[in-house]
Image (cartoon, rainbow, N blue to C red; front, side, top):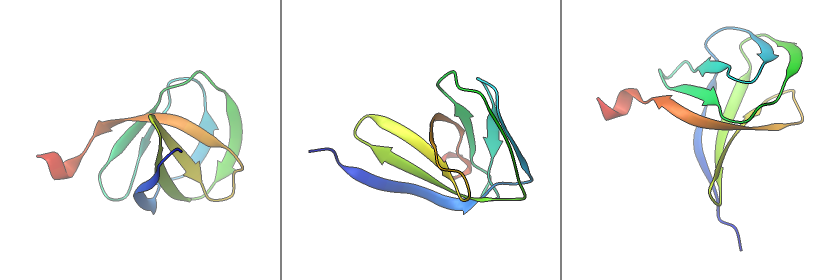
Length: 81
């Protein structure tokens, strides 16, 4: 059985225009996450709410308003400093 855990729930710091394979996402709480799988998608969301999920060994970003979970890795955590 896979364990599902909510890691972060916040808003994106700015607008989302989609992702291109190595896109970095900065959240309003200071965390920075980077796309970790090669996927391309164009969409326009104004400061969307995001959730970061840990599902088994995968870390996935969910945008409110988009029906896709995007694999990501943490690039910066202000709480670790």
